[in-house]
View (cartoon, rainbow, N blue to C red):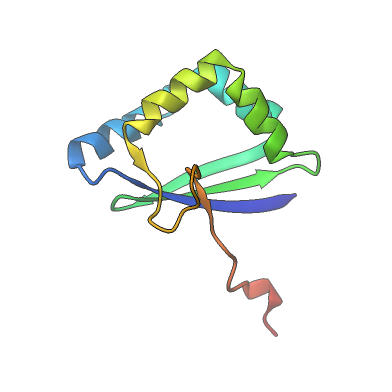
Length: 115
């Protein structure tokens, strides 16, 4: 299992942040979106928030292919509808590459690697 950590910011508006959290409550994310995530080889996904900053943690299987998932998502009208909805809440980090929504975070400390 491989772990990926991705980050982005929400629009810094308390009402929008509350609504974003409501959209992510158990049972609120559309079934087709959850199915797309699981079918891609994402075994576990969590999103954490501190202020307007989000950190998404993905544990993926060996067959996870981000490019293949992106291509499937681009062709899936349910996933695209979800992404358009989320675009109203989300904004890329200021250092994100052009067209990059979620920015990968670099691992800089691992307790397991310490003597």
